[in-house]
Length: 485
Image (cartoon, rainbow, N blue to C red; front, top):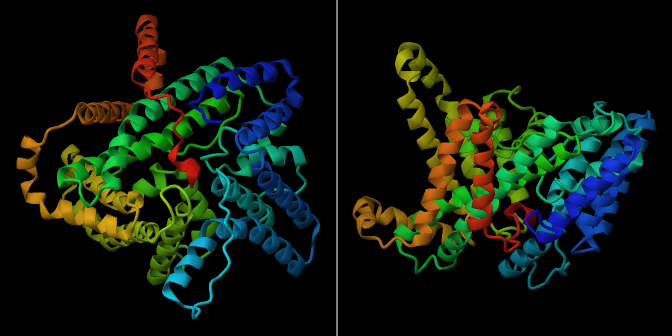
């Protein structure tokens, strides 16, 4: 069931009605039932995977809470993590690696058997949430004496199950214990977030998607200017698609009185790639890697070399996490991760230089023009990495860059003679609107501005948004990109 489908627009009001009629202490059970219906709607068999992960982490958490000897605790912890993350790794990579080994003839003609199965939709997201549950219990940040129903809801909660955010049990479970109540302020904000998320998905992302898909399917034949346009379009397609899902998920949760963690914060206004990854893009995943991989590896405490290695490990693992489904399994995701890791190395290497420049030229470094320049440079560094993320193969990714690079000096002339289609011009207009919105939102949230605006202006904006969804939205129930990872 997709957020943009008619089924969901019938499902959500029904769940809200039952939720409102249920006593506060039992409302979590309504959400649990709704979550299993939502997740199993198209593929009931996927509920087996979801149930298995829930039982594994609950049982291991219960055992960890009661085990006293360190060797036993370590054994329970490892068993739980291997069951959750090991299955995720097998789903994603076993068949791919078996094929690569066979193609390279590394086993002398012996072919490894294929599983022939893939991870169910959303598995990467709820597997990471499940792993964090076990890690927090093992580290003493969370008690293992949890209600099984609450743990099941934490794992299966329907707004986040397909594409996050990757919620933490330490944030989520206390909200269930305190009782679920939706107040008018959160309910209003929830509806606003749902509307904005739908706009980003069905109006912006889904309008750009056909243009991007077409160019990246015919890389060898597409003209350089078309590939360049599609590369820009993909940057905004993936952002609006993914952040649109997050906005809808956060908005739905507010309708039930639940607050999920923030996942996006106007990422293309970042002034450095470090800011992009640490503070603005896919925040829940970045913090997961920081807390459960980077810091346990030693973080930056063991010297500059160890810190650089740890950073690259995190980004390579992030590349592997994104591989599997989505745009296929391939080495492009490792290159994407390595490239972003290299950006962090460059940032660390030049940090002292920029600090000294800032001390010597404070007025220059504080200027708005320099900030804009840094934002533009950062965006284009991220844009370069998106080519590897989106391309079907390394050959295609390098061909895109080669074709664009070979005609880079001719681009001003090519732009003047290129026959832009109506769809492309519409795409540019939608992107311009999004950028203007986010610049305004960066200074002060648009929803706060609307709350303080006169009633006529506020409701005029709401109606304009609804008309835009109805007139410009593409409601063909196209999947969210990150549901496939």
